[in-house]
Amino acid sequence: QVQLEESGGGLVQAGGSLRLSCTASERLYSSYILGWYRQAPGKEREFVAAIRQGAGTTTYADSVKGRFTITRDRTKNTAYLQMNNLKPEDTAVYYCTGGSSWPPRTTWGQGAQVTVSS
Image (cartoon, one colour):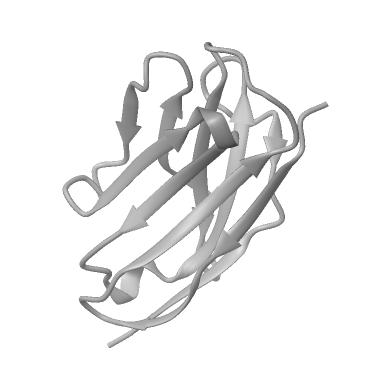
């Protein structure tokens, strides 16, 4: 089974940027979907963004459109989440996820803390 390893995250001031990476343990087939969910303290886990490996088609939550960009490098089996213009409400643990169908929730990474100070 595919395993996902995350890196990135940290502490940043409002308006700043961070990038998360998610690397799969094996080559992913074209229809595989990689994405991110996040969970803030006291809130339910929510979808953030996803990308299909082959076509590179992307989907975003309304709350991050225009600020976050998800990309992938198939040669490295890695997806990236570039987060710009971060807001305090973006503070959460971000989980890389993967799956062969929508929504991509079959496999989960270990999580990365993102904290945005005001």
